Amino acid sequence: MFIGHFGLAFAAKKVARRPSLGTLVLAAQLADGVWPVFLLLGWESVEIVPGATPVNPLVFTSYPYTHSLAAAVLWGALLGGTYFWLRRDRRGALWIAALVLSHWVLDFLSHGPDMPLWPGGPRIGVGLWYSLPGTLVVEFILFGAGVWIYASVTRAVDRLGSALLWTFVGLLAVLYLASVFGPPPPSVRVLAISGLFGWLFVGWAYWIDRHRALAGM
Image (tube, rainbow, N blue to C red; front, side):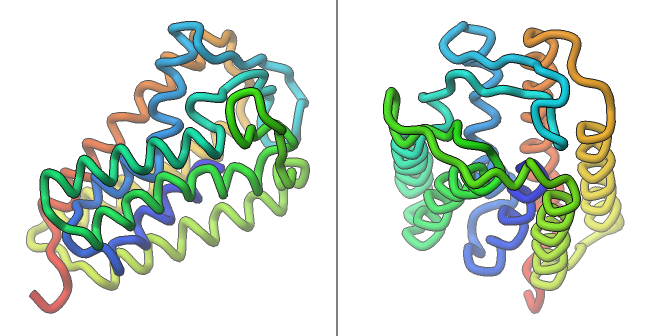
């Protein structure tokens, strides 16, 4: 799952009004944001196998610290707890923790049986990635619905508010399609380094929210 995670982050603005969109994107993408760092450190591993699934060429051999269910619970508690300590917003903190956990749930639906329940524990997965049409439909429904919800509960306060949002949405869609239909990464190192650029989308999301306000306010 890729843009589906962003879709949930957008949609969460309807129920978590106080956190910035940047914080919601950070929560939904935290596992994938930390994963490239752990790859470069050698703490987790992946193999590039063209044709491994119709959607992507990655075989996730070990990622217990970023993508196990137990890790998702701990990362969610850490990020949600940190947000609550800083903002004293209980509702927002709970939704942030839920978004972190949602990453594992969506990946469980997408991946084959490689999602660990805990480090060293059983690995499970539904395997949506084995169907390219099914994956595209689910991803774009989640993404489109989330963007629509965010756009309906917020309004641009200046011209940047619209431009930043729709450029962000369009670029994510293009990058997703390029990752699905383009060539595989040349190496794991290149994959990890390119993954680090995902943090730019977190900053971009904060930028978007600075130029938008809740509808009716």
